[in-house]
Image 1 (cartoon, rainbow, N blue to C red):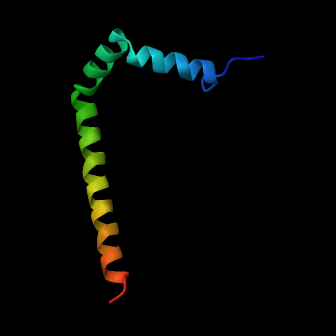
Image 2 (cartoon, rainbow, N blue to C red):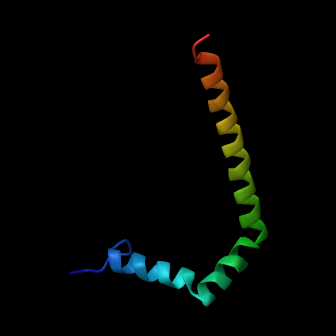
Length: 64
């Protein structure tokens, strides 16, 4: 039986590593990279626009 990257034991091992001091340090360094910051900021702006549009649609299509 092959062990796939998405099997339960691998997922749990990745989660444990991410919570370890070494994994947390890696995460911090990764999120400080300029290209990662730019991508996450772009996603943030898109999410804000999407939520604003959804809220606007809810208010305009509700009971009057």
